[in-house]
Image (cartoon, rainbow, N blue to C red; front, side):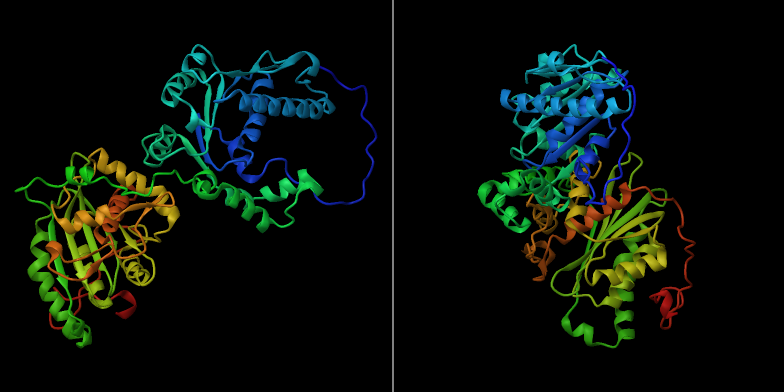
Length: 522
């Protein structure tokens, strides 16, 4: 059905008033604008996700040259609600475009049915059952709503992905239903880089920050009992109680255990009797920090020559290397892990240096000694939180900011990268871990905390174990290995970066092997 008005009404100038808000909130706009073949949205309850998806379904089916929009919900009630939303959008768009003299999308009396809407384009919105066979043989854009609650999500995905062959699109949106649910497994695989799908994540508080409360207040008007945003949010969280973390904060339940299974860690350790990475530990006595700095430097230089130099000389000069460093000054350990990328593209740690209670200047000294002698050093990533920022900045100044990444270990960084780290262990592209109980327990210390894989805020173990020290540990080797794996996975320019040139070595009585002061000290 088409139509063009005979004439346009004369426009009247209205008095200035409040700006009309955008129909879709920013997170809804991002979902509708996503052009990926497969998009996944892990979301809070009741933030208008299905409602905004319905708008895109209408535009998909109504456009000339468009395609069918298929919808799969797990219950009849939610399916009816979605089709009602589509009908609302269809009528709204029809009214808007009729003023432009374009296609009128829908005849309300004839074309809106309980589970189907037909358009003048010849395409339709069609609601289907949640059985995988219902989607087979069909083509278009398919939305699987509340995907975590379907009985056979893997079967649905298997059937839906066939639509991509002829230009279809697949959309999954859902709140969580447990950490072991197939929906969460898809999310984890996306974060790990195993699936190249687009991923969206919106918590209830993020939706509120982007205008959800104002939208509710606009619609409900005087009926809204909570007159402040804070009171409304508090009431919503109280209503969900113990389930708020999963329903509102997008945190899968049953996810508070160890992030890396013990069997996985031990399967990546070198076999008993095999040569593993060199594990070099030094614990500095508190009195060491009171010595004059030149005396400390000579002592550490001698240790570097005797202990570090031989293992550095054994590194394969033909292979790329990278490193990760987790910083600590007093309470925990500074751990530097040098990783080699083999010809088979498998990363293997080759040198692990643990320093307890090391003065800042001596940590710079050891770091410089190692980096200067690592062959084909491609990239390093360093913990730049707190006091670690000084050591990371020193290394970036000296070796180039493209070669040394200064990492702030935030929840966003953990959420984005820790899944890839785990995937590297699972697919054995990170292998050859030391057979050492302290290193093993550092990796076991990684936990899911509010859905984010990271370390607890308290120390995880004493550094006794095989290290022979009573210094406490805080998952230090785990973070060092994690950062080293991240550094080698990231794109970087081979060779020297940022115009880096080796600085002539100066020191205290030994021009060839002494500590190199940082540039601003020369």
